[in-house]
Length: 398
Image 1: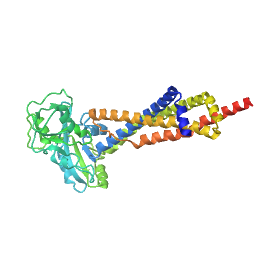
Image 2: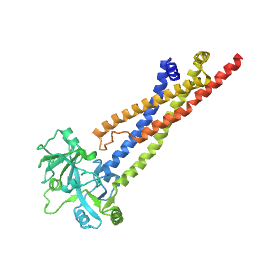
Image 3: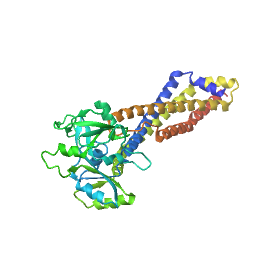
Image 4: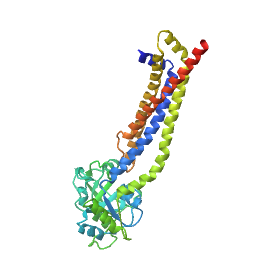
């Protein structure tokens, strides 16, 4: 009965109640959106680096190196000799696997990645299947064959048996290599990361395209080397061997991403307080408006009391009304914020190298629950204000 009265009285002024819900929902939605985007981006970046335990390449910016190799963004660093691959493979006490990668060309903006068949055996960890799996076709065998990512197949309309030419550089309108055509022999299953936008080809294809009359009896250069160490300790032993080298560098992609997150964290430290401030302001608006509404409803409460409603029941009605506004506002806000995140994440996933998970983040749920708990706690303020106002009226009447 009390709940029914509280609900009916709350909606006796629908405009005021609707505005209260909207203010609360918008504040929560914005905060949930910011938190979800940060969490989704973090999970997407970390997932993309999992197949790349270590990377070896020429000296230069480690961020640029990782962005180019892992995320297929930015310009590649200078090449290093294939001899580096041979030496790493010979170091069997420390190195389990070393796979060369060669960059520099593209197909309508999608990166051409020269590599070797061993790349199809790479796993993020032993509990997961191969990182690169075929949804159709077969693996690479001879030069100028291509295995393309899902996004490449969809956006360029390529199917098994189709042919295409590459362009020099990473721009969509680069200079075309007219001498050779690539044939699609395989299409990758969804990688859940940047290599949905990759075009894999035997590394000999890259060497032949850039031979310019050079002798191809020896192996050419590579841009990066994916290195899987024997174990955790061996990874750091191998890294120590590269510390003093000036002709090559070894990086842990996960560490580089952590550094990028630290930079992003500075921005997050600004946005999070803004989100909390918005929620605080929304609650303040809700409580002030609830107080004013309570004062305006003193006549209604007086009638209820005359009909036999106790003081305790009146307080219960007030608490329930404020709780409804805060609870429903937080719920609608979470739905709006998460819905906005799904829309933005889907748009970014189709146009960027980072694949953000379309899933609920625990941080957004925790934030919403915090809003509800704090809101319920401060909902006692209108009750206290009502108590004082009612007491003042009682004193005046007596």
